[in-house]
Image 1 (spheres, rainbow, N blue to C red):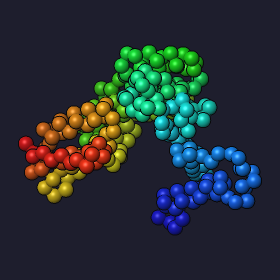
Image 2: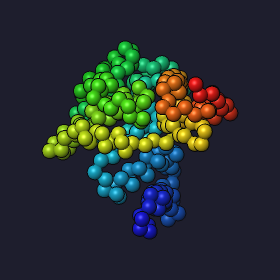
Image 3: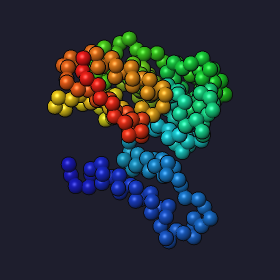
Image 4: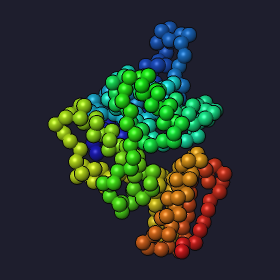
Length: 263
């Protein structure tokens, strides 16, 4: 890798370009009385700046906190938008009910930009439909695709198969709108799955005589999904190990590690 082109170098360079624009002493008079961005707002600005400087063909923005009032929700004309499974998360700010959370999440819907969502419960689904109508956009609910590989390690969790199905719909519609001559085919999908890696998300690590199951679950919905994934993988392991370890963000927050013998 050539000097000055690595990820760490680019992050550092663009971070200070944004930071110095906001806080440089010579500009103090221009910004006097104005508020400096909060942490998540700064990250959003940094992301926009980086993608623009790097002249990317496509950028994917994930909201930090909700949607309607999120720092990333300043894009007036996104190509497509999507919502994954809704759970009781950030309830103090977005709740108190999952329908309230659905209202905030659907704040990313924009006129004319096709909207997608995985299948939700009845109440949140109705909120999403109403918001899509108010925002003058079409909303499509996505179910798990039957054409995805069955025995792929990265798709062993049902929620990952659902998220992958949603991603395929998004990518297909994006190409249809921005580059209709290119079509997402089964070979593209297989390559994407084979090259997929997300450390700490439904991750299995074999080390010596131990097998570690890692995930950053942080709410009731995701903890239930991780428990199901852990149980299924524990009993379906091809090569049993003497010990298996399950670790989640919740475990660490409570200084708890669970250890279970391999059956």
